[in-house]
Image 1 (cartoon, rainbow, N blue to C red):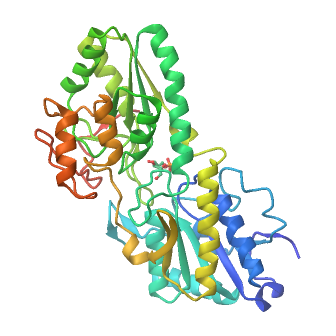
Image 2 (image 1 turned 90 degrees about the horizontal axis):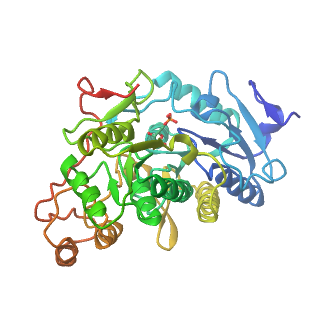
Image 3 (image 1 turned 135 degrees about the vertical axis):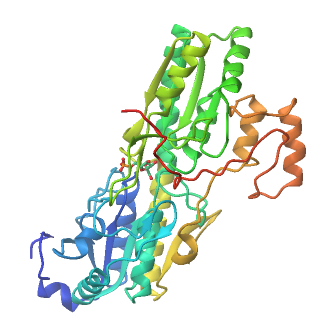
Length: 421
Ligand code: F6P
């Protein structure tokens, strides 16, 4: 039998054995192949065959497109980026509109998926994806399709899991970029701006900014002003530092609350953010007369080899997902909570975004170092934070004097939005 089938009908050989299906959906990220390998190897040990659907959910129906997966043909993929199954964040399977509005999938489509699952004798379908893809998995589960979810996103913005794989690799990439900007920025005495991914949450900007020694970090969660950034640059200049490193998440709002977008929402795909780095560079240059340069890191953050941390986490997720299928624990999503691999119901997990809070440990560390978030801060920020942190719980946004907590809303109308290109 051919190892790679483009179109159905199913091979009779696939129908005799109980199988586990797996697909990767949404934007790719480092570690997807490690999940696939972990799921396939552990499934084989439990006596299942494995079927990998191609191009995300699209491969499930009309036409059905899949590969038989075996220990042999997933060998050597642990350290590779991307996904051997392909992925898409567009197409017929769209279960969420805006930030969190449910869209019911076409019942005929759901029926067709059910038929594919029955035809291929699937004990379970492992759906690896971000928030939007897991919302599709939840609707599958509601009509009786045996799914298990695996969370994936470099943005690390799913609250049911402390970390998603891909995030650490993205942070490593962004940190290296900051290191490189440091040397050239210092040589020329420039303000260097790095725009990183982070649609709803600024985790990549925050972690890479601190790890790379940035001077200003701009996040979707913290409202900032031009004056406050300018002040940080001037303070550094007065201290003899002629360059400044600014890291900005693509989903950060401008001070007037607008997003910078590259391409407005189309029917089956989300608005493409991007370009805020250029806006920041232009404005600071105009205000301060400083030389600025902006770099958009873009998909470099999503490509390439996963870090050791991401390989390990992804492998653990793959093995745990297989175990959930084997134990009949369906409608569950695997997750990591220090220091255990656990699972939660997909329903509870979707739509619950994990955003940076003002009293997050890394935010507090950054303020302790004198890194500016461009927000208004107390006269003695470090002391005030120590006092405020002591009074608040870990996941409640802190109200620092003068700080306005800002919850971003990607559903906001885009008609007044600055278009970068
Ligand atoms: O959700 C992950 C993410 O990398 C976001 O940070 C970014 O906005 C988006 O995907 C980019 O998607 P695409 O590859 O479709 O441009």
